[in-house]
Length: 126
View 1 (cartoon, rainbow, N blue to C red):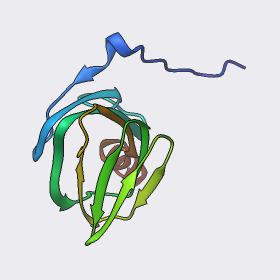
View 2 (cartoon, rainbow, N blue to C red):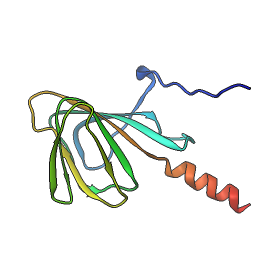
View 3 (cartoon, one colour):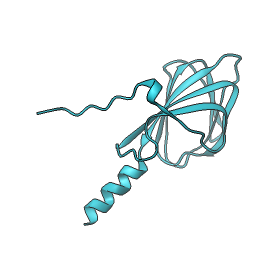
View 4 (cartoon, rainbow, N blue to C red):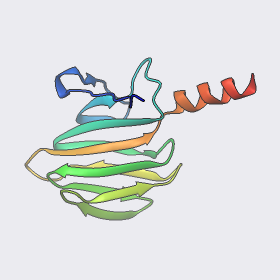
């Protein structure tokens, strides 16, 4: 039996620009157009002063800070996150993220893939 494996090398990662993000350079490691996996993974690089505006997360989301320091405000509760700190946000949580330092910071964002969930639901309905 063969075990499937899917590898994305960083040079293959697809950059994109989500609404409400300023000074942030995210790339899809797993996700984006035509991606059918169950979970997405995004690597987001925050320049000094970079931020994601206050908005609700669309679905349960995990953040893992890889480098630098990022400040998260979740429903008015503010925390500085350092390398390997992790945060779980439930669907609809209002949050903002900001790099308030003079050094770049990077964060992994992991969440379910809504396109895969929809495809699964429509195949089960048949």
